[in-house]
Length: 115
Length: 114
Image (cartoon, rainbow over all chains, first blue to last red; front, side, top):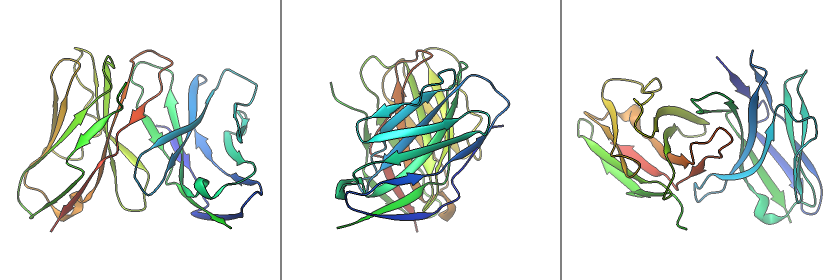
């Protein structure tokens, strides 16, 4: 079974600075997808970024980028120019490329942004 | 179009009562998922529906939990004889069912069992 580990329960960043959130995973599969979701206090899970395992290029979405290290099974999220609205819980998630595509989540990290 | 919707937003019930939670997926999405999120935890998979295929119930924690879905529309998650440990946020997600799909989540139902 796949597992996702987020070892940092909380992080804080100064507004306009850069922060990196860590995630590692364990799998025996070679083809899969990785995701970062944001969950603000409203509870709505919002997709931040996704990465296909077969792609060597790291995904980027505006101020959000990932460092995907397939051999190390590491998938970190970098948030540049942090904004107050980035404060939320962030979850790393894994999904197999197969037919049953349930997501396996880490425990999440609470990010606070200092003004 | 509209996103995934869930009702009720919050539900308070007494231990031993049955509850029904509802999910309306995005129109046209063939895949529907239920997840549970306990306080301060990540999401745990409960059940997965894909079109007319038999659902994957492998994540249901006990036989008190069941879910139904009619075609590619609304789904209901039923918890019978609720226990205090059932208190959690129950989140529903839907996707297009394609291999490259992204799951889009509803706002969840917060269940509190007293």
